[in-house]
Image (tube, rainbow, N blue to C red; front, side):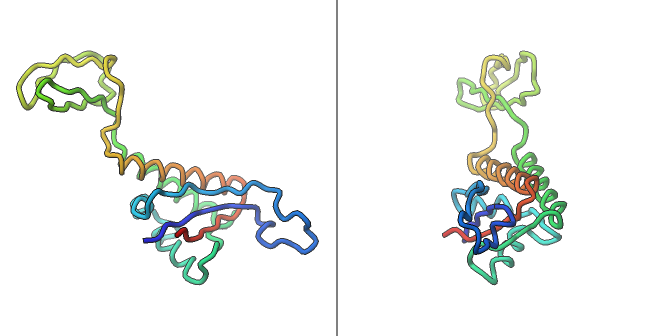
Length: 179
């Protein structure tokens, strides 16, 4: 599996002129890089870009050239890329689930209660039957999602922010393979 990196830079810098003695002079935007190809594939698997899966679009764009290729440009691709950014955030919210506070019974059974519980309550342990007094102010909130899902969602949120920033600046988005 291959990982991909998105970057963005001003359109004028893509074709430097011979008269330009300083071709740089701008801040290159780069998307975050997923720790593994599996994380990237999970993050982008159901996301669409212009009626095709985002990964499929990336792979078709890179089929002709292994180097950085233009993936999206403003203003033509602005609505499609913003919809893609919205989808990334939506999937991250859906998979993150609701924040919960986790308690442990003396029998080591875990009890997860939504953060929306704002008052102390007594709950019976399913394993041993003991009654536990749960106070939401007594335990720090934690996410009930596994670490892989949390990493996938962090990557989705960062990639969404990158797409929004690139389009806000009006810069083309390029994509390249990372080995």
